[in-house]
Length: 632
Image (tube, rainbow, N blue to C red; front, side):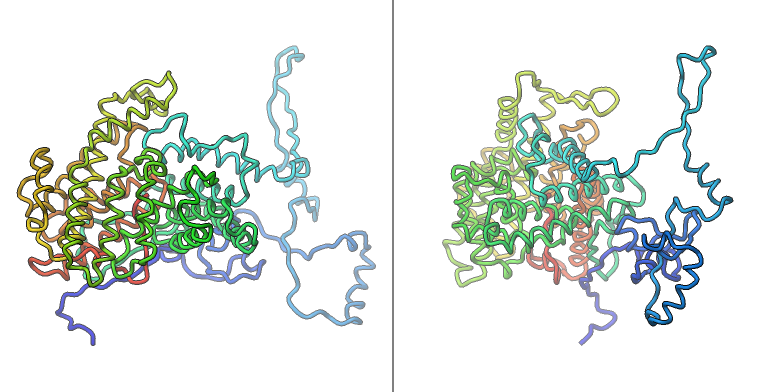
């Protein structure tokens, strides 16, 4: 039964942005390109979606005249005009073929008349000025420029150059943002001289990923980039799924072409009994998960994650792929662990899979070997905090059963909170800088210089350490908010009654949080926002050493815990602006999707929650038919 008009309700609605919705052009007949290829055309001027996706020019709207002629086959070229007049009679004898005759565009070198060929010859002839030393007066002579025939280009030259250029782009602009501190021993950097040994499926994903990175960075600095408002007043909540196809860019067609080739090649490899469970296929699937998340946080990454889980289970479990077992998947194992663990954060408790959630406990003894305390990942979370996230996911699942109110579960919650509160952010930041100095060449100095701008910007070591500490505190407060919200507030537990004296002691000695634990949630949220503000205040002055580009997940947690009913509009604006800036730094559309999702959460909380009530973590995550990830 529908609600009465005066009742204030909110509902979820999924909206996908597309160029057809934003185009202001009038609908008309099909364009010439689609008519020639006999395709259904949407008649969007000046170019239709199909032509844009295929990377071709939509004919009929440019200055060049269109001339349609019948194709001349090689056997018909030498025929005389007399023979051509007899052709209709022979066709009438054999019977006229039914159907529409095929039309082809007249080639550029066809000359129908002298009046038409002479201007064309003058147009195609290009002249350049050169200096001849044997000229006595030093005059310049005109020398005709000879065009290189396409037949002289080696086979596969353009594809090989595209692959090499994208690999070089990845080393220069993407790999440096996949680790906390970039240096010469970056494990994600590839050696270009070995590029021919890479499988085609990996090369296709590299091309798709790099072109997506270029397109998003190009449009993120323009006024046409989708902007979202932080002031939500409408009762109808829209969750917009931003797609790379919504950008008017010629590279979009190339992106989808290589993405389709990736899926087709993976499908063929999965049909092969020998390759189905190989290291190459597993590494390709894990990489495809990141490519899908880059193009949209609402993408098809869950299906690829399930495929990776199936391969790992078939091979004997997670420990089979540890480095000491000579597994050849590179940094893919760390990526799998992060996606598997963080994916549970964005899943409601009643939808958590028992086998997958409890299997995450197998990662805990090997976090030092795999994740390296967050140093070699674009999710620089300390192993101690990552372990707490794994155990929180486990308790969230167990809290749905009969043991939800058990004393053992309460004791486990207290231990988790104690480990989070006793985390030393300053010591973690100091250890990361020490590792950077030990792994870098002797010529490395404690200052990082930005040479890409006019004039080198020197970033002192003290500034780098301060930023790293703020980033570590942001992760600490974000994990604490996740713990307090899901293990205490949503379970109806009173934080003062649940916390043991062992938990309160380190808080009082370190003075990281106020002793009034009733306001623990608000204190942690305030600490998280302050750390984020300090971190983003150093954006312009830190150059490539700025570590705020890794603050995606803490920003999202801060947005989830904001109460829109208590005058937090300035913090909402800060969160939305920061996420939109992260689209440029990450070269991904996930932060823009996060803005849309947070605005929906704020509107839903403002209209549905009454005075003194709060929306649980699971209710805020509920988006019918959607799964998402806002981490990297």
